[in-house]
Each structure stands twice: as C-alpha cells, then as structure tokens.
Image 1 (cartoon, rainbow, N blue to C red):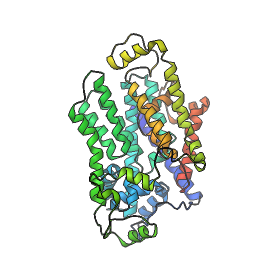
Image 2: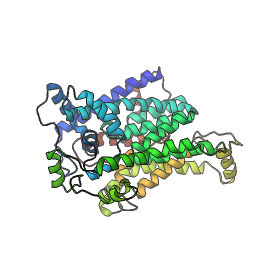
Image 3: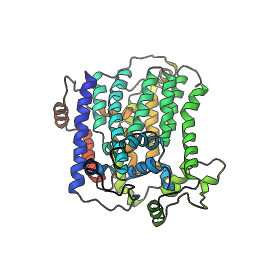
Length: 444
C-alpha cells in the first residue's frame, strides 16, 4: 500500500517539476553561458513527436547533461569529457536511445533516454529509501518522510536532467539494502558499479570493510576486487576509447578546433596517454576543471560558497548533535558497541547505533572533501546523491507527523504549516534551480 502511494506521489511531483522546467524555459530567454555546447548531430527536420519532445524537455539539455549525451552518442572525442565516467551514458542512455531512435531523431532519442532512465530509477530510489529506513529500524513515518524528501531535495533539477546523480544514488542505496540483508556479494556488485558512474563510488568499499571489522574478520579478496577494480577498468576503457586516432564528423572537428579542445586526431598524443599506467581522471580534473585543494577559495567564488552553505549547515548541525549525544565518559563503551557488538546501554536516539557509524564518517569525509577540494557549487547535489543518511537526517526534523493515507495535498499542507528552515531550503532551491538551470543560468 505504501509503495503504491509513493508511486502516485512521485509521479505527481515529477510531472509538476517537468512542467515548471517547460514553463521557465519558454518564458525566460536562454543565457549564453559560453560553455561546452557542440552542434546537435541531427540537423534535419523531425516529426511532430520530435518537435514536442524538444519543446517540452529541451530545458534539461543543459550544462553537464550535454557532456553525457555526447559521450553516449560519440564516446570520448574531447579530452575534457573524460571527467565524466561511462557507466551512465554508455550502459544506460545509449542502449535505450538505440530503440528510441527508431521513431525519434538522434538528439531527441538520447535526451529522452536520459530523462526516462532518471525517472525510472528515481522511483526505485524512492522505494529503496523507504525500505532502507525500515531495515535500519527507523520508525515507519521517518522512513516515509525520507522517501518524500528525496522527491523534493534541493538538487532535484540534477535528478531530472541527464546527470549521474539518480543512477549513482541507486547504486549506493541498493548496495546498502543488500548489505543490510547480508547479501555481501550483491552488495559488492552494487558498490562496484558506483565507480563506473562517479569516481567517489570507490570509497563505498569502506562499508564492506566495516561490516567485516564488526565480526573481527578481514574482507574477502573477491569483495576488494568487485568494489575497486571497476574504477581501473573504467580508466582503461577511457584510455582505449580516447588515446587512439578517430574519424570524427566534420562539424565536431570544427567545434573542437574553434574551442581549442584536444581530440584524438592524426599525430595526437596526450601527456597521460603516454604514461605506463594511463589514468586520465586526475590529469583531466586538474587541467580542464581546476580541481584541487583550496583552488576554489577566491573572492569570485563567494556566491557559490553561499549557495552551498545550507547543506553544510545541515550536516554540521547534525555532527554537533551526534558528538554531544555521546558523553565523554562513554567513549570506551561506545567503541565496544560500534565495533565489538557489546551493547552496555539502552539506545534512545536513532542515529547512535553501530549501523549508522560508518554513514556518519562517510558523510563527514565527503563534506570535507567537497568543502576543500571540489567545485563548491556542486556540493549540494554531490552530497544529496551519495547515500541515504542525509535524507534520514532531514526526515528526522519532520518525522513527528504520522502518515495515514497521505496524499500530495496533505504532505505539502503539513510542510507549509511547519514552516521550517528545511522546507524553505528545499522548495526555494527546487524552484530557483529548475528555472535557472533550464535557461543555461548558473546554479549549484
């Protein structure tokens, strides 16, 4: 019953978000952001269906979505695109687009493929968040609100557009679901799939390590191979796909030459391609994306720091609460409880359990990494797509409301009546984010 209810609510919310994207894209002129935007590969006129899809969903073909769609169609033809891993565009967008191309122009087939994949896996994420909450022994309404808040999280636009956020979160949620079900092999497969989508997926192996440390065991070799090797296989694939000469369409060559983009043409070579172990990721992030420790700490980036501030306040406040919940004289007993399964006291706070300890460390590490190393404006979507725990934290603020035959009207009526910082944060970022993103205006 709850799953069907979530499906209906999910469809209503997603339709409203798609509609907002369409309206804002129509009434607000597109901004010329001077970013990566090669020519479309379908130049002929399409059918009425093509025109409808392009009109309704073109606002989602913006910013990094263009990278993923081009990778899905052409592979890696520009060196800067190597920062985007192949799991999402090549394993998901490309196969579905192949079938959609039977009735649509290529450009629209790939766009619609990315949108449909995110819509489907978005629903899977909704259900998994609810089921995971129950597996972690959260109260049903706490688990329910975690799923609801996923549908309206501040980074929603990146879960709608052809970005990796939706699929990556799915890999993490399913990995945790199988880990809680003690299906270690399946969990490793899911966590191992993560690094083919995004580089930070490799650190999810820490949850497997913690699982075995609690049992005073070492992780088996197969778990290490399954969780870590996909990252290096991804790097090898990018090397094979990019570091050798290709025959490229003339319009894409012209775009590359005009924008000084490195391409695999005659007499081509790149510094990282010539190394004994050709790993592109660090080279491309440093060379093209200016990623590095404190590199974003400039006066010009203050607005981006302010945009990312709410998610850090949210996490920082939780970390403070967590530390204050553990009295100094109980550190030894807490260590025994977290690692040795010795429970010397009754737990009354949901997050003070051994199951949530690795989630807290994981979230703290990602927050610090985003704050000091990454482009700060991506911190919101980076953290909201990295696992279930941030949704559990957010739902904890409103979990007092018990769901009984909940519907969309009751849910938003309750949220409006609560008038919390969390609600305004979520709603404002959804509305502003969709309107700005769909018109090539800067957002998180």
